[in-house]
Length: 162
Image (cartoon, rainbow, N blue to C red):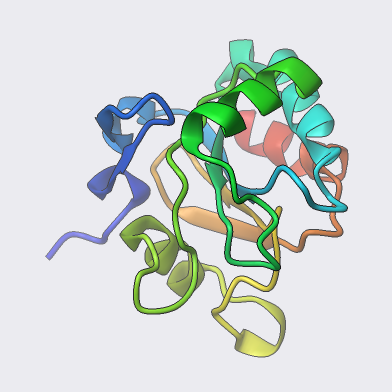
């Protein structure tokens, strides 16, 4: 059996369309669970900045809103989309709100957590704005905690982009 990659998964866009992640084949991906009412919410600015600077070289930032951490993203998809666009100018792909932990965790995040464990080998996502870095072959190559600012990952992304 072939090794599973992020391209084997689908996710619903924030506009409600089911999309295969295979459409990002050949790109470096930074996959982030986001929230609109979190202390780390200003990281949207850094994520958008990375996207603006590096999308032409092959970076895609994928945002997945999640309301599992202290109810910090309670709004519906349309309100989340408007918030991100109006406040942070987000135009990277955003997806429908998901769970990242527990029995209802989205299959993509189950895969990401298995492939890139957290501190002391833990799998669970600890908080909003946990970031997973994926190479051009769809393999998870890094996991960064919420405290890691997007710009701190830039060198790792540029190394993958060559």
